Image (cartoon, rainbow, N blue to C red):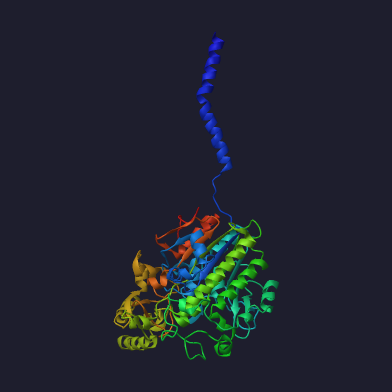
Length: 558
């Protein structure tokens, strides 16, 4: 009887616990089949920067784009519609550095394309480095390195994470558009040498000799084949999203008498720097795409399980914008053609790396302003200032106030650099001198507001123009007084567009994510340029760049 009762209790125990046991078995089996993913490993990451691309170029020219370029990125990827630079000045060098470091100039140190170096008393170039020699040219155009960039990049972190086995290749018409994205550890960074050459070159910082695939590309007629007239890709009558072809707001190439299409590139060749001329046409972007595709094959990028990185910067959009302005037929045609080059690149990635096996981001290094002369004619506030006249007036004020003009060492990037030694020798307060000069400049035509270095040091701004300026202010490298010009007021020619301000026309740029590990969708929540590198780092499961201040955009990642 006791034995039977024990047996019954045992059966009852099994019966009661059976469901949980089955659930546990199912859960264990499910967990094994679908483990939590802590990283995504695309075979290749492609970072694309389109120089001087305003966000509204996406929407303005949308109906002219094909299905395989910008539209494919938007429809199959994730679009950040409210993406901004969070610092000023907004130039090419700082832009590329900020995209790839996830930091601002206050940290990575690239405060301009050029800036006044307070230690040497000379102007320095963001990528220039006399310690290295040119490779692929007899000129000094290859004496470059990223040594002025103080922090690592997302490309550096990928190299470190993979014990230097993941490859990083960077290409751009501009040296700074390749050197800074490539970071400190790139396998190669290449840029186009114009003039009589038309060849892709590099620096001994990376290598002593060009690889065979680069030599083969330079020896081909690929670049030379673009020496042809530039006419519109489509019927110009359909370019309703831009202004008149004959326009007083556009510049002209040397030798031209009209701003209208077609532009006779062979005829204009010698008077416009020969191969340099191609940079100011959409053909420069096509040449960049050609070379990027050659790099894809020549370096076997995306061929194994270790993630590689290809950084591509399309620079012709900037050259064309500076020459012709944001409302020109030339800018519209350049973006329509760029869209086809992007489609060509995506198709090649599909074929070589495989659909769903690569990840892309596309953004810009800065936006651009409407031509002020055009805005003035439309009764919209805008203007021009002459820096030489401002300097003359300021020197007179300083000489009258302090008895010497030696207080001012340099004016550049809308910053005043003072001679601290002279100020100390005169037993003056540096803070008081900064405030006095800032107040004087505030009364000048075209100046909206001023800030002092002491304000940048002592305060922590979180919104508005001062927040943007502070992110661009580097304590060791920036000046003593910072100028903010009025909206749409520039130091530039009366034709063509420029950039550099803290206003939305210069800060609002596109941001697309596409491919492996990326959700489909869009957001109008504000994102900032330093968020890009941490987003890619979070996707790859690697360390953030060491100066990064951005945050991963969680809506983007699967």
